[in-house]
Length: 394
Image (cartoon, rainbow, N blue to C red; front, side, top):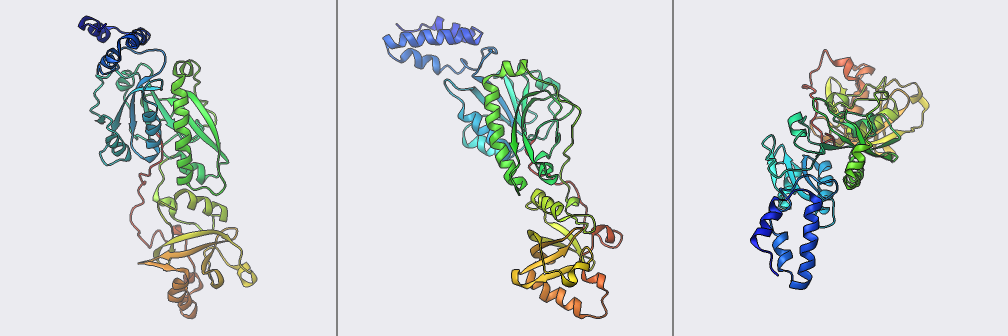
């Protein structure tokens, strides 16, 4: 028995996911007797998954907002969860630019892409997902999605609300972090109710990049878990506690200037792991900016005369080819530096440091690294604007 045109039209008009699923099962049952032609006809109907109204269980029609590599992990999981018996029925993407990783992934996998703010809502999405998007979504956009818009945030909210939670987790030496799935609200970032959370111990000596990659995977897994039981998660959502809330502002290049008198070995180590791969740590050498590269952590030189060294003092350790610098509570090491060009520790010693010590006319203070605050009025190194790092939020 073939499905007549009147039946196909009814399928397109009927609303309610449970009704449609029942009809689908009926047609599939008939297909077992009459062949696969009926099932193929129903599944190929482009309006079958795009015009029914919101149901109370997956699969969902998802509109994804994202930009960077952190967001790609969640989009991958959503894309892999589409099809029969999965959590995603329809998946479309909103991006800010054609050059971002999310746009490239969507094109490679033939997902429909909307360029913000020109979003076509004709597909009648059930829920939105925003990961590392960077823009506040207006209330009118949120209200177009029956289940609202979910955000994958790489911290244990309310700790580290804001655009750079991963960097601040490393910078402040947190031992425990995690991922949060929350519903976004208009006008303010990261203040919506929590639907799901998972703890994640911070690995020893982890960098911000390594931690971000790990949390991207955890966040994608938690997102799928949330979508599998979305109505229940929303019913049991909880508002964020204002107590304990901390803000994670964008990382500014001004953070890279070292203040030897105030910063400890551990503090410099955390700073390097937080921002070192994005922007080098910096100090001042004889009135010029110098970048400190290839950080090796705290060093333990043979003290002797070094015990009385003042912060900023420099020594070259020949056996390890390392430049040692005195900070507040000890010595830290760097394998290379950059003035006009990159120099190994040995090259810097032979070309600059060794000669400086031999010149009797130079004062002792000229032979050490100076904190930026000491030279603010004498040196200009450009403006320290916030860096738009990929931080994995919003």
